[in-house]
Image 1 (cartoon, helix red, strand yellow):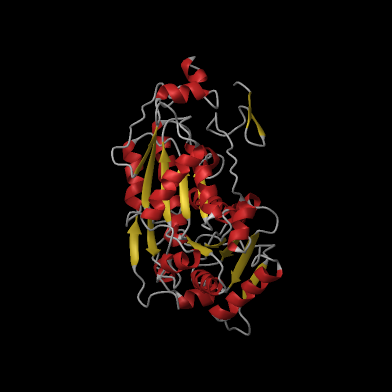
Image 2: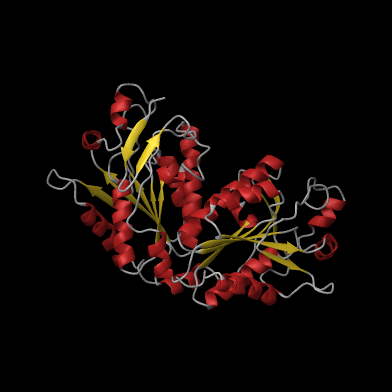
Length: 222
Length: 215
């Protein structure tokens, strides 16, 4: 493979055969960058990654958080596992390798949204620790905020908002997280939300916990 | 609660048991916040036709006017989301498909999303157009002749293609299917290519005239 040296606006990029499947690929610099966009939006781009069992309340929290941020004049966008699987990831199923690719793609998209200056709220079971950590690695320090909805299987199953636990228990769905597919709890998440005295916090309270974190870390101003 | 009372279950593609979630904040609310309409400006053309240049110039002009934009550049995406794809025909199709879906998400977020890719196959571009209703897909055709692009050869790729070191290079040994119904066509004027700023202004005028720069 040839070694190509080329100059971008302010950068020199060295190409070699170690570049992934597309060679002859170049970085393009643009005069409008992340900082400019953050100044325009008066916030800092980041990814709030909500993980937990089915029925733990991820989408509810994502929605509530999005609404609270909007009320404060902040631009947020929810990437929801179910919504993405109708579009970008409609070619993927729930086998382990497809779950990994699902999460990989979502991580890359979330990275783009953070680069665009948005608060990107990603709401995915994302059961495998390695896949979540790969997404974390895509983002600069501190801008990947993992929120673990640590609700018990019993609570999630009792809710069963989509009737999926029932189907899984009856053997009609295979490889369902929590029943016959593992959920690997985060070991180092930024925010953990759990039941208090056997009661799940309200969506507003959970959102407030995340907002406080974002405010304290400076994401809600430029 | 953000969820509907009765879940709507669907079997879409390879995923079963997928549920649509409603959210109280949607595109309309975000557009009001940003003072613009979310849309996708899809810039297509040969390598060296100036797509990335126009994308950057346009994003700058829009940013100075207080508009939120984001550029999806074919090359940049191939370092991340699309790092697993090559330039074979089926991978080009998948590359375009994924970019189209991501651009749709950005438009839904209220952003003016500028996508800059060769995107040589008409069917693939039209598939992206179909993802965005309500005229939110604005195709910009960089209609500059192969000779001009090759004379520029900004990345040295035409030279490599002509000597057979790259195979399947658009314009040399892979087809470019020109758009037949682009909203905007950028061409030479008086034998010269317009300046980046003039080309950006052409797109900007279209956006202004058609109401995209207000909610």
